[in-house]
Length: 105
Image 1 (cartoon, rainbow, N blue to C red):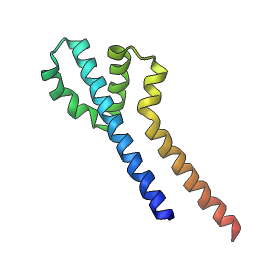
Image 2 (image 1 turned 120 degrees about the vertical axis):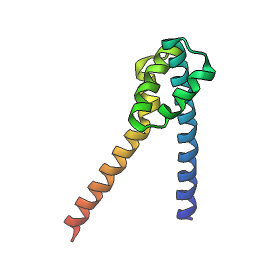
Image 3 (image 1 turned 180 degrees about the vertical axis):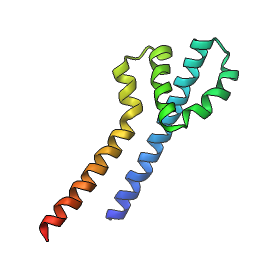
């Protein structure tokens, strides 16, 4: 049963991550349209590669969401940075578990 739950949450995480990537792509696209005044069909060729470069896509996505969607900086940062926060927490929990398991011996 535990493997099914882990598989479900792993699949759910990937779906949410993909959807967030699409929102990031649209934010970058809107930002390019606003900043440079290019039509969407030209801007998509610039936005798509940028969206899936990890740090660059996040930063440009945040700026695009603030500029084109009118989001607050905190809302944009929260939406686009939550995977990094989860990774840091997972690493910290895994590292803490390793440290405490040494004390148990």
